[in-house]
Length: 420
Image (cartoon, rainbow, N blue to C red; front, side, top):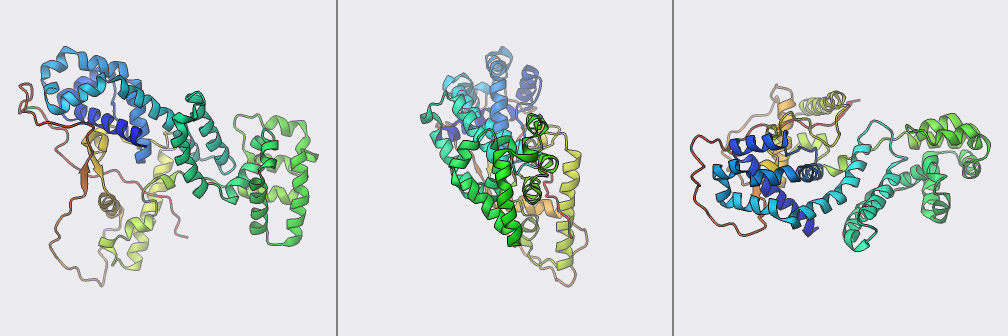
């Protein structure tokens, strides 16, 4: 959306200015008592976390730019300083930030739930319905304000997340079914999803027929489904539909087994990431002559490193990158002002794979030295207004450290894997 993109670009101009010099950064941390920039595991998460952080610190940032100490440093006289100052004082900018947060926050909640250890197949469809309802509520049901966002959500939802498996999980989750029974039965796609899963996951026709018969017991809440304890368990804050079927689906043993298989499936937000295949991260165009044994070792290390990282970060926010200081994330475009291109991403994943791989060189392959001309892989974030060149102010001296002058290695992002 152009409006959201423009707001994000303005926000980046502000954060890049604040992190460009040590004295400005120290003064900012003095006012807000923490880092302003947040590091997310995906670009969507990073955008949401930083816009949310800006909104939470709106008053502190406005006081910072009115403070005499910042004015005395002289940075506000530069072109970037003037631009950042105009952004902070712009009410339309803050309104745009608030609007973007209202768009992003319900979806970020869905991503957090999907990356939890709780099986989420039975909840994903319902979570997305709730997210759309929450976005609508935040804009007082004025469809003109969120219609474009719904179009984007529905486009991804229709193409990726409305499979028979997702529909069947939603239908067989008693938490949603008994609340929305009439709407589900009127929408034939949910019943079709269940029938499709039955025919694909159950090989024997006799068992398929029994499941269809048992399905009526679940729909009418009869037998073990109608017991008071079964109804009471639906209100449990830690409700697990797979365990509910295990405990209360005894009247429908065949359907109980199928529902347990579907509702025990987990979900992930990895589709939101650019490159989620560890094999593709290792086997790149620049390094496609690896012997089979070394390729297997590299992929093994990447997957199992992700398993260890997930265990270590179990209690952390799943959409936040685990860094102690925002400056450790040296390729964060909200600090550097440089937006990565696809070439960067390929080079980045290759470097990560090598940094975790086996040290031994591939045998039987002769290395050829050649000079490769470096390609330009980064482009600057577009500015929202014309920037005029401005001489350095008196406050900028040689002793001040430019925070954007250095570059370094990145944190490793890998995926879980078992080679067997």
